[in-house]
Structures are given as C-alpha cells and as structure tokens.
Length: 254
Image 1: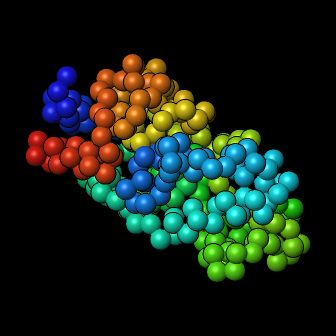
Image 2 (image 1 turned 60 degrees about the horizontal axis):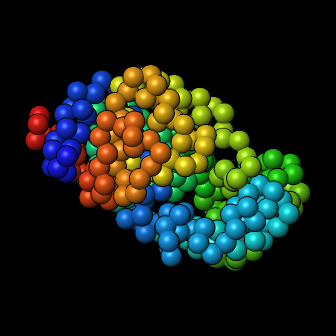
C-alpha cells in the first residue's frame, strides 16, 4: 500500500473515532532532542547495563551509578521543548477529538504541550521520594539542585537518598495510573500508537488490550513492532513529521 493511501486511511479512521486514545513511546520525543533507549549508537542503553544503572536493585546498591547515568538525560529533559507531534496531540485534545494520552515517557512533554489527560505509565520527574521515610519532594526542584551540584539528592529529614518518581526496572507500574490507562484502552475505538517499540511489558500490553476490545490500531513508528501484523495501519515515519500531517488531514476533512 502506498504511503499516501495509508495516511488517507488513517485520517478516515481518526475522523470516525468516538474514543481516540494515543499511546506514545520514546520515538515521540526524539525530535525534541531526547534519545530513545535502543537505537544503535544513540540509545540510552548503548554504553551501559540497564540492570546496573536503571533498576531498583541497582539504585539501592549504588545510587551514585544511577545519578551519574541520569545526569545528561535529566539535563536534556529539563531543556527540551515539545515538538510538532506533541503539539498536534494537544490540538486534538483541545478540539475534543482525543480523549487521553497514555505514555511510556517520563519527559513530561505532553503536559508542556498542553495535554490535560495524560497517563504516565513509567512515572515522571515532578516528584521525588525519600527511600527511607517516604517524604515527598518537589521533583523539579530536586532535579535542578542536582544538576547544579551533581550531588546525590538527600532527604532533609533523615538524610536518606531521594529517588525520582520514575519507574525503574524491577518496580511495579503505579497501580492507579495503570488502571486508568487500561480503562481508557478498553473504551477506545481507535488507538494511535506513536514511537513505541512495544517491547517493554506491561506497558506494551495496553495497545493489545485495546485491540482485543475491538479498537482499530494505527501505528506510527520508524521500526517494526510486535503488533504490526495485528494493526490496521502501519506508517513508517518520524512522529514529528507524520502526526502533524494526520492532524492537518483531519482539519482539511472538516
């Protein structure tokens, strides 16, 4: 199928959706300068063992290794701006076409773009929590201080290490967020999957849940995913280029 035909069919599906849900992964934010995790030569796992630097077990054993690894990523996230794909999804929500965004990303760019209903399956940097007394801190202030000092953030009360409220390997997803995402997926009649490899469970099971409940699936991703064979439309393109094109197609159709 020609790409233009596929785009036209995707616009038709989006135009007919009663409950459109977007599911986004790291490829959503690469145009904002945030690297994904698996790309050769640029992925975040290219030079490190994720189990050592980004698992809860590694964090407990050696939080310095985590903070050394996360420093450039945190710096990039703090400086990043929403790209055209983020802004396009925010526009879809503003005009009542998009019900919600379910994201694997921790960069908070959907909110910065203007989306109001965002289910962050892998957490975010807006909060940090003491690993001993569980006191909660303003995560952005903690992050800014860390970026200035490069010192491990510690609790004012007990001096234990603070952990950003992002989900590390070995941690369960936040149950309330997961349930809200699952409910949204069950209600979706169209799910737009953008920039996700769909390889990290249980988040990767969300589009499959939507499919099993009758939703049409549109995938926008540069590489193949395990769900491609079950998707209704697969578009091989960069999110920042294609998602705005889909939104323009919807606007023209109106």
